Length: 430
Image (cartoon, rainbow, N blue to C red; front, side):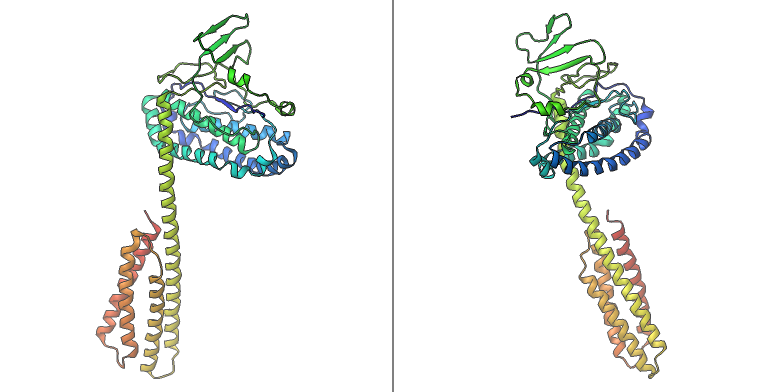
């Protein structure tokens, strides 16, 4: 059984940030958001076309690999800026060096996995949505922490690094760049390391039980972390190796292990894709973000349902009121052109008005109003009922008294006031 290389990401360590850049982050991020929106449209088109191609070819067309990989790299860099992990402005071109790097190895993909990709991705999509929702809920608190402290605490920085790496893996799988299912949201397992230099000398942090190797070399590719478990695992097929195109966002610098919950400001070494080993504090932050994501999504769903209910009730109320108005206007026109006896014309007029308000009352009773508008809707229903009862009396009366006219005017004023109040409640459901 083949194994696939992991999508890796490097974020370095938290740096001191200028507080004014933190304070104005939303404003400063506007150009990035616009550019991200535009390239997301282009990426969406490539994903749809690429799905059909991958289904036929068993791989994503090579001409699609680079733009989709660069899209994921830019997205990861942009969100690291949005999340206040650093105040260095991400370049719009991923070819430029930046402190956040992503390494995306492209591999062959299973046609069955491509065919059912939209179903297979659901569990990972739920996790990604929950943790992203948790960050959105906690955004104000994160902003205040970084604004006051002047840098992001390492435990929080590490947790967000793990989130962004997970999402890079999620999008790489979703876009069919790789067949490796996204994982390791809670970071990699801790392991001792052996540093092997060019002269062949080895230095181990824990000589008794090394489990991974850091190979140091000179030049732009400074270090690489290799796990013995990965080395012992089955290798990728020859055709998969042949298709493993150049990776994008290739990193420089030394691996970062987030094992200690302490500040590391002042570190100016550019990061490379390294193992992300989270402290217990970082893992607790991730759990908190997931919980906040669940709560936030539940609250969002409740609000969405409330908004839909309010919009539906407002639409029904507006249609009923427009119908009522047109029927009243038609009754006035008919009364003005009536050639029968005055009493007969008056009775026909009030009969038409009573019918119009009865229809309005029927619609009102059949409408489900949200809790914030329920009280005012009940009062409107009571006033409408009184209006209908008075009109029924007037349409069958031979003479109309002044008291009835005054009562009709009072009910009309109350009706208009209460109708406007219900409409206001539905417009502002919160």
